[in-house]
Length: 230
Image (cartoon, rainbow, N blue to C red; front, side, top):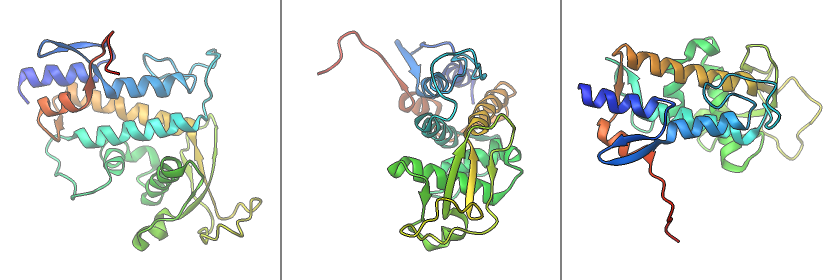
């Protein structure tokens, strides 16, 4: 990455928006996404730190959780540690982001990682707490009945004692042995920490973009106008 490209990526990652690129004022969609997630989860919009004094928002907001998953998706699409291989084609960019920048935050546990992917699918596809993968090979890892909560402790995922059988019609709302728990507060913290690690690796010249810097900036920034197209 040459000095110009590094400066452009620094602007894209930086919380100071907008920035100038090729004669236009650009806003980073990554920073915009983070700010929206923060606004709805009682976090300072500048640094993502939880602030209980903020009156609006809810730490357990489901839409903000979807937003954080989308932020992970973008970071996995855009970056990898310097020298690391490209993932296989169609590899989940959320999984890639967590594996490369935050796997230790979930104890390097493949089951926890796949549980998060399953929650992302359940939330994003039809806003529910059950996930049954269409591909049979993922069922042992991504078939889950979720309970989501807010806990100020640091855990992100607590796996069930037994696998949920996938029976929706006869689902027992009171049974907990087959329920996967996800702490939305700590999940938000996980994404914020991954973002800081990506920024730190960039500052240390240990980060690579997975596409040309110009492509990244053109794809993941936007401009605003007082005269929108109607």
